[in-house]
Length: 184
Image (cartoon, rainbow, N blue to C red; front, side):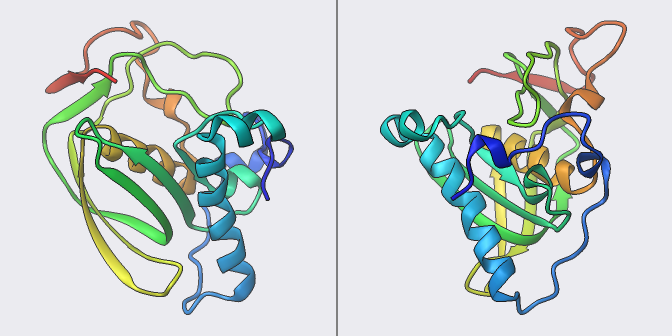
């Protein structure tokens, strides 16, 4: 089980590396790592388990955040209609996206960044992601709203990009061009 001690913090070199593709079919070790990413985000959202193990609540976690430079993410998030998006994916890729952008009005946070970094993070409003599940099935997922933002945040980790890299340095709360606000 992953704990907060396993999550590396901002400044660690692994967070800035481009992670390697996972050879498929995945090894048992890679399957175990991927499963533990999803397990962490699920556990972190359960108040009893989170309190017992001192887990900081999260909705997504990428393998580089536990110092494993491989293309794997776990996401467990609901959209504004209450639909659950719970995925553990090998080699996730954004295969298409909207021209229109969005941003979370409250900004973004990250389990690897302890301090609050205020500012708007422009993201695509709608994306389609392709990846491979733990069972080895290739999936294509259409996303919008919060789930789309979360998948982009986690996939960025696989490319060594941090959310605050997108924040306008001169004016952090300047509305991104061609973007609409998303209230969480």
